[in-house]
Length: 166
Length: 196
Image 1: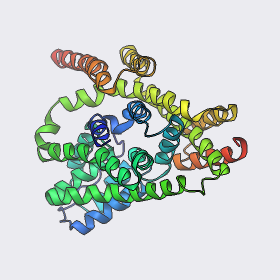
Image 2: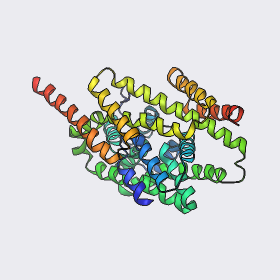
Image 3: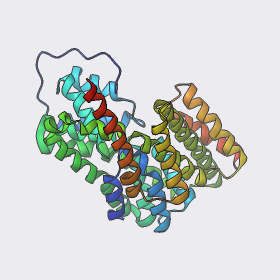
Image 4: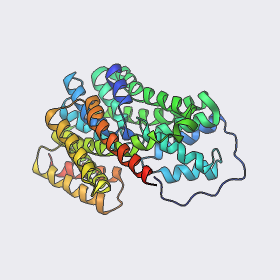
């Protein structure tokens, strides 16, 4: 598990937005979570403060208790942070290079493609009844058209779920 | 990048104690929901705490966004290192990751407890539906940023198809499509600078 999440940590370009599909594949393949659990853990990650990928802790917890949570979280955050430290110590040189733009702007379309894949990944584990589709559509519109915060939209979804998804 | 006007430069930078670093990034971690707090963090660190000049902050933010890992956590590590070296970076890392970890652990304790009764389970499914909506909204907004450059859209669609329908592993996705997309950007960029 440390290796899987450590690897994902290093591949977590774009703030970690792009790793969701691979994380799902790994978690389900190794039998750590079901698709449904993965979607729910991801949701909790979006609800709580801090980076969304903190939900790695829940995958670890499901697979191996509190120790699993600690190992998974450390594996997810330590490697990328060490990279950041190394880059930070030579940051003058690093920030001067035009490679920064090549990676930041050049990689963007692929990261966004991965976000679209994440929608399908999370949707597969989360949408099982037509009210769920309706709620997802409403939240999509609210997110784009209004400035309601993400945690609030998730709590609204929870209320809707308690009412319509029983 | 952040669109706000540049912050006024402080007369001189202040020193930071490890404790201050822990408090500042602990608070940032606990108030940052899904990013988007960068303007606030900038104001806090550049104007209130005077730990870094605005120019250095922007550069640090760019590096934090380019490298893998959560942007806010990367930024915390960068700042911690800038103001107090390696110990500062470690303290900032812990402050930025341990509090959210404990909260998610508490959420997990509840999730795996007998209190996870059917109505809670139904609520969680509703919440997950909302999370799908959020992610879809995010995808749409990000796609609007790419519009209307067809090559970018091509790479985006190709990536999504390869990952979702052909289960291309992430590392290959980044190497193949990421490589092509970055090369395309690089070439365009190089051409543009040749003309000038």
